[in-house]
Image (tube, rainbow, N blue to C red; front, side):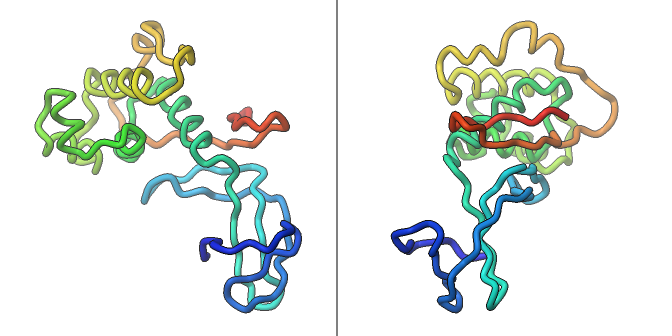
Length: 180
């Protein structure tokens, strides 16, 4: 898929970047890749398809708001964060691995091993990352990470798995998590 750099004046007459033919718009579920090994589903993505060459493009409304919605859902997740989720949250904080490791008081190699899944996530580090995201990244007053949330983070013996979720863009222009 190509990124759209030029738009025709009317949304319904966007032209294919490959062949120049008019694109057809539809609304459908789309698997949105968050990190290399983790994707979520956008239930109502706008998809543009070229009937001539088959090229497809996906339009994501307010991507920064989608990112914040994902981060909000992650910090409320009752299980430990997976490596891909740690990577995503670190990127939300706009930090390099060494910088986040220093803020957490751990070696950068340890953070890297959490992110790759080589080490099981430490519950204390997990809570610190969530608190940092809640304080430094999410809007004030979102109250998504409380002491109760932190206390309810499970410490399963099994492997931490990325959160499976479906989101949609509601009529008020807000990203929401769809009911499971």
